[in-house]
Length: 397
Image: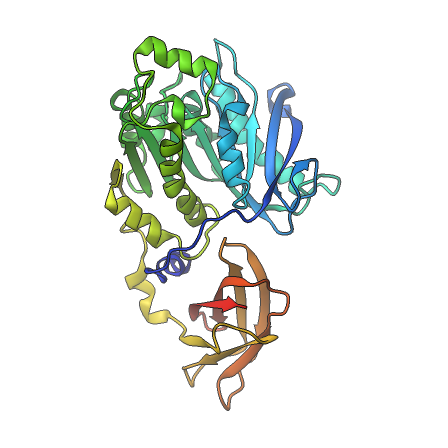
C-alpha cells in the first residue's frame, strides 16, 4: 500500500486528460439474493465497450465496479450523466431499481447495494456471463439523497469487497447512517450543496461526514449554489420536492454543478478505486484551490512518501518518446537485484503489459517490446527481486 501511494504522488506536476476512452454498453440483469428469501434485485448495468449498444461485448481488460443508489422516489434513469461519464472512463456502473416507493426499506436497499458487489464477483467467474473475466475486484458504493445514506449503511454488509464510498446530498436513513458512519473505514467522498433545501447539509451530509471514521481518508465538499436535485438529471419527483421546499431556482446550472463534481470525482475514483497513477496530485490541487466550493480534506497526509523515499529504484527510459518496437531502460544502481518485473499502465490506470526481464550486468540495461501498445501516455513500474520499486512515465508514438 505504501508503494501504491508513492506511485500516485510521484508525478506531482502531472495533470492527465480525462477524455472518454470507451463507448458505453448496457445490459439488464435481475439478481437474486438467496440470503433474503431469493429477493429479486433488478439492475441496469452500464459498462465500457468498443461499440455502444445493448448487450454488446465489453472492451478488452478488467474494470472496477460502482454500485449506485437512487434517491427517494427517484428512478435509475435520473442518473444518466453518471453512466455516460464514468462507463466511458473505464468503470462498470450498476443501478439497482429496488425500493423506489414512498415507503422504502433503507436496510434492504443498503443490502441490495452491498449484495451487488458479490453478485458481480460471481459474474466475473461465470463463463456464460457478459462480464466473464472483465471485472477488477474493486467496488465503490455511491448514492444520491436516500441512496447516499444507504451507501453508508451498505459498507457494513460487504466490508471485504467495498473499497470506497461516495455520496451526493446524502440524507440520513432509518436506521441512522450517522450512527453507522464511525464503522466506515474506507476512503470516502461526500458532496453537498449550499442550496439544498431538501436535505440541508448541516442536518444531513455534514453530520454523516463528521461521524465517519477519523482514521480513514475522507473528503467533504460543499458546492456553492448547488441544489439537491442537480446532482441527478432533471426528474419530476425531485424537482417537485424543490418547488415545495422553496429552492426551485438554484444559483448555478446543472451543467456547472455536475461539471464541478466530475472534476473531483473522476481523479478520486482513479486514485482510490482504480489505483491509477498520477491522479492524486491534481485531486489535492483542486481541493486546495476551493474554486466554487468549500472543502474539508482529511487525506492530504496519507501518502507515506517519507517512509519509502529511500527504497526507490532509480531508472529511466532511453529515447522517450518511444518510436521503436522496443523500449529501452537504463538503471543506475550497479548492485541492482535482477531479474525485474515490469508493469505498464495506461493513462487511465489499466494494466496493459506485464513482463520480467534481466538487466545485463555490463550496462544495466534491458528492453521491453511495445509494439502492442497504442499511441499514448504510459506509466512503467519496475520491481526488483529485493523489493526495490520505481516508476517512470513514457510516451509511445
